[in-house]
Length: 211
Image (cartoon, helix red, strand yellow):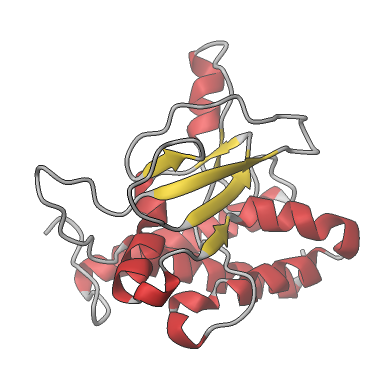
């Protein structure tokens, strides 16, 4: 297992853990809040294409009528994210109005786009994705591609409980698990540890989970 992959995966796991603990913005009971428009991309690995999936808040379909412009998230047609995963996008565009129409992408979408160029050089591709997630620390000063620091899950019709349960398991990079399983296990352990530590002492500006 390449040391560079582990170092990069560690940084990404800690970043996702911190993002998951961001305080959610206030939304009135009769309001909706910021919506993130999903732009599905065909997946070259499994052939999945946009099947006009139903989206619930805070997601919105591309063809949904919008009263105001908002951020866009490109993602593979075969993946899905939790609502909590897009919290960094919502928080950022509400705090920095200039970014209200910013275009983001999932890790899987970015990984897929890099595949023809990076080839078997997984360390280089993962390092590029890691760099493109650093907007979360200082979005006002960031330039480049904007990748969402969030794990992904496979989205497909379930053929039984066993398959459905397996599909619910997150993968930090791609729903097709393109890296060695040991890297994903390491990522999950680091993220879990970072979240556990946050219960004891949340970082500045973050909410203590459950409160």
